[in-house]
Image (tube, rainbow, N blue to C red):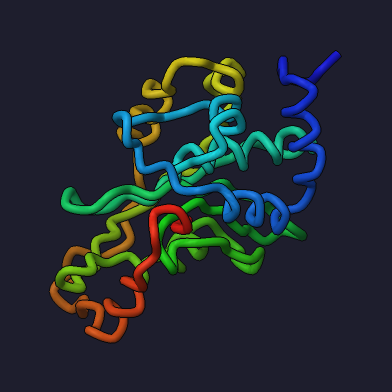
Length: 208
């Protein structure tokens, strides 16, 4: 019997994704989903069929890969200001330390090695890289607790419908803040050099 109702093809792919590095390499190889036909929030099944993904779709697939190999399917949401977009990563733990797998079209909001003792430490590693290219404003506000995807059941794995209910629960859930209100005025914008480095041009075909 196939696990989670997966097809043989889906299992063949997931069977190979047995380390965080292999999962990240697979996500890096998927073209970015620019939602040309409208906004999507695809299940892992649809992602594996269409072979493209954006951040939450990549996080769902990575979480499934971890679950397939007996780990918890955990994700983390990074909350930002309204003019920017939240970012979602899949979490993993090795020898007591947290790391993250990430699907992104940015040069910096990517994979995290398992060196973070707490979720807060891991989340903070994204703070200085989370800024608007147009003006360098740092936009990260906070982070969610680890979210166990099986708390939503298991239908998300093979659903043919968009998973907006899960996405909304993630985005609207409780988040811990990271910037003390009294220190917000001391936050320095990213420099022009940092902004230029984050804007390295990539074609849509190659952008990850």
